[in-house]
Amino acid sequence: MLEMLHIDKTYNPGSVREKVLFQDFSLTVGTGEFVSIVGSNGSGKTSLLNLLCGSIPVDRGQVMMDGQDITRQKEHIRSRLIGRVYQNPAMGTCASMTILENLSLAEHKGKPSNLRPGTDKKRIPYYREILRPLNLGLEDMLEARVGSLSGGQRQALALLMSTMTPISFLILDEHTAALDPKTADIIMELTDQVVREKKLTALMVTHNLRYALEYGSRIIMMHQGDIVLDKRDEMKDNTHIDDLLKIFNEISIECGN
Amino acid sequence: MLNALAKIGGNFMNALPNTLEQGLIYALLVLGILITYTILDFPDLTVDGSFPLGGAVSTSLIVHGMNPLLALLLAGLAGGAAGLCTGLIHVKLKVRDLFSGIIMMTGLYSINLHITGGTSLLSVPRTAVTLFRNNPVADFLPRDYATLIIAFALVLVVKLLLDAFLKTRAGYLLRAVGDNDVVVTALAKDKGTVKIVGLVLANCLAALSGAVLCQQQRMFEISMGTGAMVLGLASVIIGVNLFSRVSFVRNTTAAIAGSVLYKMCVALAIACGMAASDLKLITAALFLLILCTGLIKRKGGKKHA
Image (cartoon, rainbow over all chains, first blue to last red; front, side, top):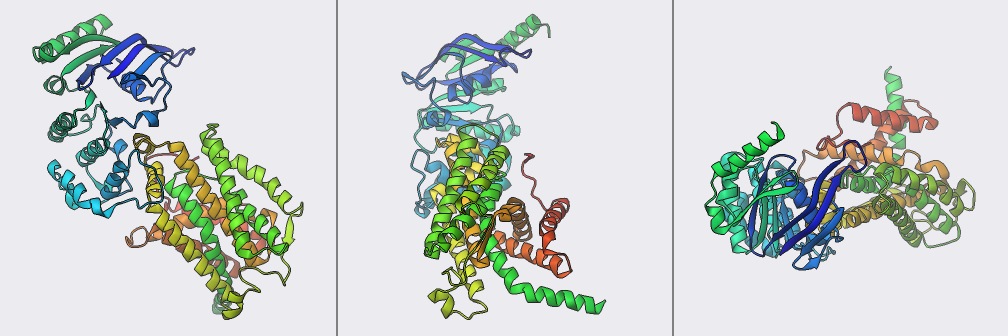
């Protein structure tokens, strides 16, 4: 379970660019929930993920993970139980290292980084096996540098790497936004599969309303640091793109756009 | 005209053994810079201080009759400590990478003088035991080539050790942090710690290089570190760019070759009649030439300055 309790967050406090984003913001995500988060630019979607992962500190409030207060815990410590995939496919992989080296790195997450061999050659068949279902041909190019792969291939690899070790939470930050529609569909389908198979608690920020409705068990719409729509299970199933667009329009009119 | 060319060629050939020796000895420093600049993406000026630090430690110890290998080891440890300080200043005190190096480089100048007992020039007596003189291995090898062979063996050992390290789990993390530190954080590792490890290793190598150089020249001179970073960087860039297309050549081999080539360029300039006092000027000009010819790798739009 992930909880954000009474969070305050202000950017550039005390300066002319001061922006109050969150004021007494709370969100609870139950174990096994797959939450899609939509909202216009600047509504606080990515900030929410950053606060959750510890990439930026909260001003006030508490962040709890499975009942444990992790508000002051460093990002890399929180990462032990969190996998994260970014919008930019380059963020989740190491370009100058090979696919094999990247997978080995990912598999050793949480283990001591000592002087044992970086790649366990005996694991190569296993790596091939988990790459094959992607249908991207990666299993035959283990020695290729990741920098030479396409965006879709890199994102698929990033998704695989972030979920390779036992984690509880998966954070997806517009992870299909930089991909072409077909590749985006493949990655999205893959994501859903992984979340189901590993029974992960997932948060997905997306601008794709179709994905937001089609996948996951709960949908949240954000606006100016507040939750303006929150539907789950059957309620979510009865929500349609038109309903979302209507709220988007109302917000736009309210803001004078 | 032909005569002049023959004279330059002659001068160059006469100096060749010494050029090769120096190229190999400086290669240790270049391997250090390979770690900080190419792998970690960290412009580390500490080496301008840790290179002579190694020289100061080793020379002082040898003058007091210490075993040259033990002196090398201690010099390497001293360099590692300097790298540790730079890393802590950068990571824990959040000082910019360039400034962390400059602070350490400046401080080390005085520390190096303290180590040598306040003298800026310390020579090793002819009878002292060094890696290259007055020891059974050097006596066994042919006199003219003893230094070259020993230097080559030393560089080879260090290179193989570094290659092996870069293939370990810790080595993978080191490469990952320079590539994309987001991944390192995602792997639940503190990227700051990994950077510190890289700096320790790099400055250990720089100090080792300075120590070996002082044993070969049989003297320590306080200003020997000036421009060490620029020299190392130029060598790395020459080596890595010339050999990057040859896939079976590792970066470490390329860096060593770059170091030797760089020393040859300098030797050529001197053979053409430039004075030894112009050495740093040649270094600077050569580096500028390398930068302007676009040989430097442009990485992901990040600016290094």
